[in-house]
Length: 547
Ligand SMILES: *[C@@H]1O[C@H](CO)[C@@H](O)[C@H](O)[C@H]1NC(C)=O
Ligand SMILES: *[C@@H]1O[C@H](CO)[C@@H](O)[C@H](O)[C@H]1NC(C)=O
Image 1 (cartoon, rainbow, N blue to C red):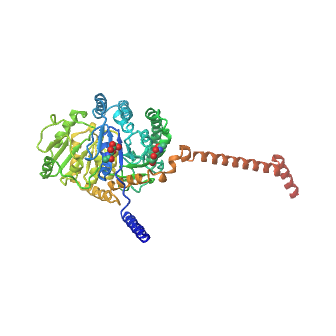
Image 2: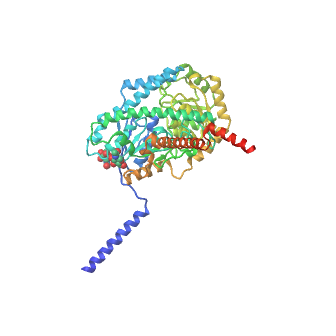
Image 3: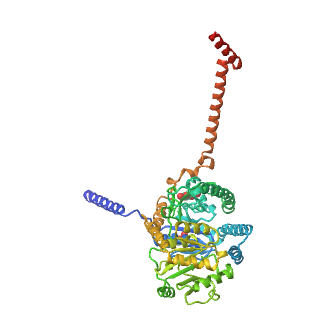
């Protein structure tokens, strides 16, 4: 009996060892986790980026639920989607705002009024979504348990409270490079001296000149002021959402609990080169497919039959045809219909197109990334939104940028500076300059050559964007957060992180030392010379000596 028991034990011990060995052979895997994505920013291009993150997690086998204000273009069959849409009148307000900005050259005050009007609607609306029953049901229904929440950032940092709400780690997803509020929440150093903000373009390896540093310094201060105002608003929103719940921490506490931020940027190839804490994970190009998917048949045939190459023309998902002045549209049509190249024109209202021409194919929606990947595409005429620019750079397609607002002018400047394309003003577009720019971009190979170089750098990474998303999310799930790699800056106030108190102390000490020294010198001077009397005596003494 004893012997048998012994062998049984050793057998199970060997079995355990085997299991342990097998487990170490594979990287530790995470069982399918319940992950919630909350993407309340009402922008199709933002949603594409966030959904690409969630798609990677769903493909990994996680159980993904997503809440957003619009149906997604990118998704996965296993993702459960909850749409809480804007009302008709809210859509109308946003639409009118867009139209104001894109039609006539609006005055500075109109521009500011429109931008702030739309922005405040976009910001306030995000709180409404979290108050909607379709959302609150997710935590009222106690059967629901989430292992991680991914929040899409768009001036809504109060949403990091959802980590405490669901008692799980919180990850932030952001569509661009690290910026002020992202830096603050993850403890990334904000260095006014050395990190160019998104409005200042600096070539790699070059110093900022005086003018650029001044612009950079002022815009960093400006952003900080805006952030302070937003933080005040965020605190109010947070109280409105979670204030009645005694189990919830304060906003100040919840804000110090973010595990990771996924930033849709790739500094090594795109710049600017800057220090990032480990909590910043750069997943630039997450929305770009490794291999293009098959195109819809009409597009495929149209492109295949383009003897002289083809051009993709799209002003993005926010700007619709009727936002732009008819006169400008007509100029664009005239130039494009006169080219020998084929053109795919993204146009929403297929019943009212700008005009018929054999070389133009209008599409209300198109798989932009896959189209840009087609070898016949030689030029991308774009509003210079971050997503489209990244795709075009990835596929090494030169760009003609027609930016209108937001980050578009900055992106367009970077395109020109890097030699990836040219920029024109959409609102004052002239036929001749439009045509000349297109010809230059089609005929001069330097743009495509520079892009080829970039594209190689952009693709050369130790892990793909998708692998990074999966690895780091699983990492956070395995360790139930990432408190161990939190930057101390998260815990420090503005005064502490900038050492302002130390400067005050050191100045005071220096002042005291200086004052003591001055007093001492005065005292010594008085003691040994006794002022004027002393001088006289000395004079007498020397006289005596001479005598
Ligand atoms: C997936 O997550 C949702 C939301 O938490 C939950 O209701 C559902 O039961 C989960 N499904 C599985 C298969 O775990
Ligand atoms: C902090 O994050 C952990 C998971 O990483 C979560 O369980 C906890 O509820 C969060 N606490 C606060 C105060 O946000």
